[in-house]
Image (cartoon, rainbow, N blue to C red):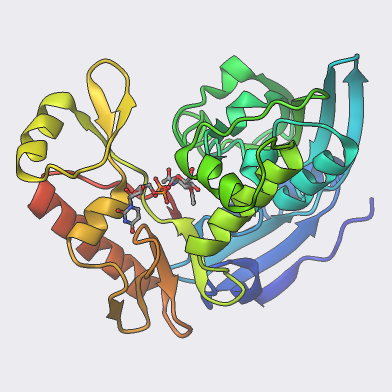
Length: 341
Ligand code: EPU
């Protein structure tokens, strides 16, 4: 079978949006499920650690990877089934997420527009249930096909099997490092379903002079908002939100509110509220502050940036300091959203 050759000592600099220099001992790109199975079952590589790489947009390398990096290059967008109102499409894990969103809009398939301009690949999207501006991947997800890393067996995962939560899925918890997501099936709509519930979208559409938004206009508004506060990784290395927004007990929130009456929050079930981590970090004085080659971004404190020459360790040390100061000031533990390798 044709598989691309396994390379040695490969720089991962261009494979992570943080722009961190790290090396992979071995590196291979796979472009089909067969090639993926073959490499997973290759006896020469069976015992060594493996890292599955999508767009490298939610990843921080703090050291070289002493194992095999498998870059997912499985492509393809295929119509599976459709009726007058719905369409189901199967997409290869290696497709670029934003290109997929643009393609859907061109085809008149709706539901993904709020997830415009998110870096990374389709295969990584279910992993952390990507979300933005009032929509999460789980809202358009139907089924996925994953490969068992030990046996090479192919398995389907339904919506329920994936156990989606806020930036969570079964692939980050119980089944961590057990499967490789190879293809994802989405359930999209042929009828525009406009979701402008997330505050700034409405306002941005008004600024754009649009009163009757189409899905394309919503996508443009989302792109505009993201560009206005999130740094472009091609210019300044970053991996989007570095931490998750913490959920805290309502009683804890009430106490804090007495001291910080402007503290923003979102409802998160009966007992809890979600607090924007960006606000907490800003309150601790980190926003826009440069620490060596890194720092919290000037327009969105939740994004840690690489000003050019940062090492992964430098960034993770800053993250630890930020966590410590938020814990000290607010009694809130921040958890990383980015995967640290
Ligand atoms: N805020 C501040 N200071 C800051 C940043 C934020 O005070 O420096 C406060 C403001 O009150 C603001 C609120 O936080 O209104 C929310 O900020 P924003 O709308 O930028 O969203 P977020 O909660 O910081 C989350 C996601 C983003 C997603 C946006 C929009 C997480 C961890 N992050 O950020 O996702 O784009 O909402 O839906 O949930 C990502 O996951 O990488 C990501 C960028």
